[in-house]
Length: 165
Image (tube, rainbow, N blue to C red; front, top):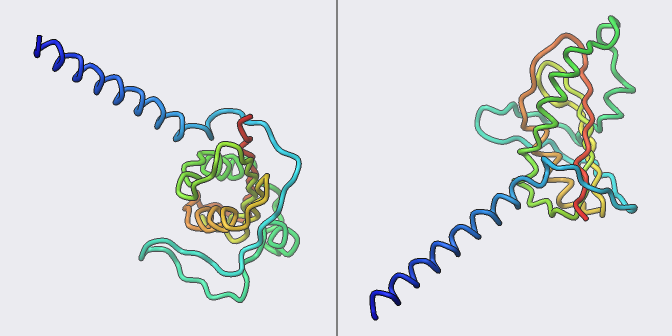
């Protein structure tokens, strides 16, 4: 009779582990699914550049630029938009793995615009719905720390991760 109790206990532990794995998978992958957007939003503009790791370039600026500021003030090569470079930049931004480091809840929509020059995000704008400046600042820093494919001129990428209902 005691063997039966031991087998039942082991079976219960296995079920709990399987349920935990499934739940963790659903927490990690929400950004790969289409998500609904909410109505209120706030745009975050970084006050300082954020770098990650010893290999990241150190930039000293009073205030980091937004994506829109970089686009409007760009005076680089006037060869027109490089669609291939923009697609490569978008592929990095669309991956979304950087969102997990900022503990973005499933109920939050996130929009990101990145202006990239020579493989580095020189302008970033993050909007969250509902608005959360702390999470937006975290995402801004994560995007600035990403390394993008290098190209001639300025590449622009925009992406939106929709909230789950």
